[in-house]
Length: 511
Ligand code: SF4
Ligand code: SF4
Image (cartoon, rainbow, N blue to C red; front, side, top):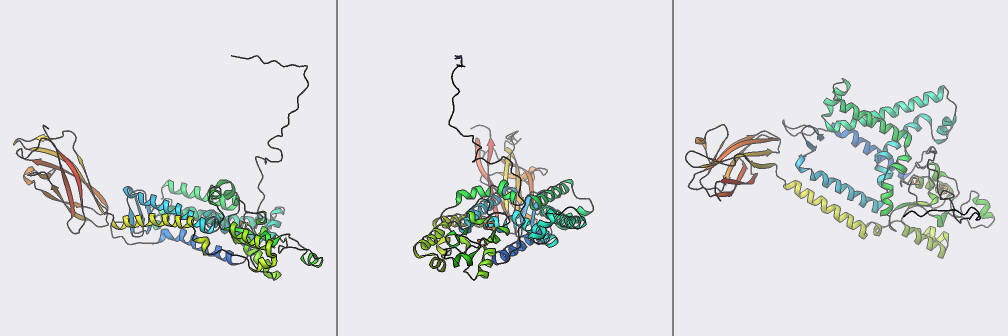
């Protein structure tokens, strides 16, 4: 029912106690990017990052060129996703489509491994091995090599366009493009014989999808590592959000030890002379200018922090110069940080600094990490066991449906079957296919005559191939059971020990 709404125009205007949702609390929908110019730093974690970058890039670019001898009937590329023949080769392992659960298992292991690593060492994946981090680091290195370190790059960025700026920018972008193209190029080599595809690419003989893939990966590499950089981690990647739900008091984080650094002061000597109680932080901002994410770790744990630890290196260098103990910024857990802060409160900053707690074994061996490790190991062992004991032979039988059976002139009953034998090795093999059960029955291959009927036939199967053999099975009338009778086809490698079996039904009238 519609209720008419009326308004008393003579009543005074009412004031509501409310505040617009976007006042003070809401940020603009679009925030322009503030360009980040990370400064070069030196130290343990920077060296570790260089090493990880070199290893991961080498693995990515070299792997498709590694060869692995699998005999004359299989490709010799060590790692190959052979889409045309529906195979995945990984050194001595060959995965067929029906064995895709191995790949699923590997993905589960990768997921559990990421959880395990995160719970032990925080976002080391983000800080060291994520492709976005590695390629961005590489692009920044190129930029620094050509344009100079932070100040020079900032100066060049602000400078009007001139010969020097154009020359440097063209050089930077040219090298970036070479890296981006070789990144896309390396990817497609995982899906075809790398040397042949390399030649085909340059002689324009490669399939269009190869050029399209290289083009797409070139564009994404160039854009993500050259321009978007930290924005990919902050806005596009779901991992920082997922990780937020995984953090606990024992999660390893790059931490500014405020209990030791605050109150910060740029005028330490003056403050000390005035008898002020000041912390170790000299507010030099060295930790901020080296940060590839452009954040200030002194603001606390932040979603943007990829825990690359470069701010630790930068601050340690400052502490060395000031002759203060390292670790004003350090890898720490919330529990460890709070214990240090409590110690500083109780015994004073100097004592707490002298006994600053670092991460110990108890941080690694705790219920959560042990659970992840247990699950990860379990999946790995199950996969390994399945891989070691898996068959390289498979048999599958499909009975004829129309007709289900044929009554021959002598009264015997004949059924037809398609017997599929899968030889999953790199060598041609000869198998014996035999009947198990079905008394008095014999079989023969389609194309030969019933006179050749026997209990077992020999079947040759090429290397790495599936062969389908059409066979007829007949049973004398005296032995036939009415209705359905179960029996089996067995298959045996005549030169080896492998064997298999497939159940089947024999149809006869009656029942
Ligand atoms: S580098 Fe260390 S001393 Fe300098 S501002 Fe950062 S935390 Fe403070
Ligand atoms: S705050 Fe430190 S650890 Fe975090 S991203 Fe910046 S430099 Fe890396």
